Image (cartoon, rainbow, N blue to C red; front, side, top):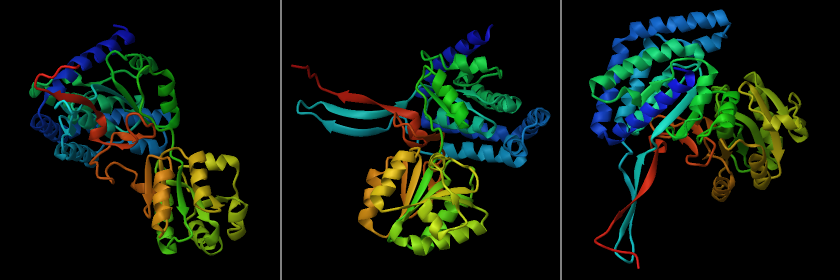
Length: 418
């Protein structure tokens, strides 16, 4: 079979298997996930052995130490994968939930019920744990899933899939509901993105170049976020101790993640007192500052900021900073330069906080808290499949509920339309 034929068969089989997944009870799905978790732990030696093939190939290709670390599986990480499956098993099942019911004048009872999306394709890089995490979330939400991981993790991904599929077979559930594309050629991705007849949604997870490639070539709706240009606005009424804690955490805890702070906005009324303090603290933490002219009056160690800095997702210890006249200018800056990801305000004024929440056009908006909380687990979703900065059909961190949609249900007693 050609690559195109293989991909079409995978997609066709996943569609058929997804109908079985959609009918499974919560108990059956939870039991499957728990059995999968136990199987991963029981097969740790096999997983580590297959992972060594990927690590060896990665070293030969000259992958960075950071990339090799993301790729590596050991006993601790396999246990963590298994714990992730067990955690998903404990989450409430969204499938079948009736979210609303209302009565029409003709006595029709109208409602909306959550149902699976169908088949979800996930295209991702490097981390093998995504194979187990994504499979667990998609299956728990009653979907079929097709996984296409990066070539650097192909042995690990296929080994994880074989272990999980074996548990599906034992439970009498078609293993085609959990498919892993078994080859690394880019043609496979291109063919996968053509299967709009069988696949309902594509979720790419990785760098901006991967996501743009998927969006450019997909005939299927894509959930995406290109980058996270996240802001913190320090209002005139901000508590300085609180603001400092939030900024340090948002910028320095993990600077290489998409919910890290990239641009700091400071109200002009507190610039003279707050900027020298925060600039000294951040410089001591090895953060390179790039500021506008006003910011640099109070932080001479900052480099001049350029127009490109306001668009930048640095993913390292660099921070752009600007002084703004007030809330209106802060909101205008965020809505112009932001990436619809995550923004925060530090303020003690309720009305200001409420305007910020209403008028900032991003998927996660926080008051007096770090941008690092823009994460499915931190927000109480239990786990997340990714973060969406598109508004259809999900916006922000995506949990189980976001892997479903709703349909109308109508109860009558013989009504006909007049």
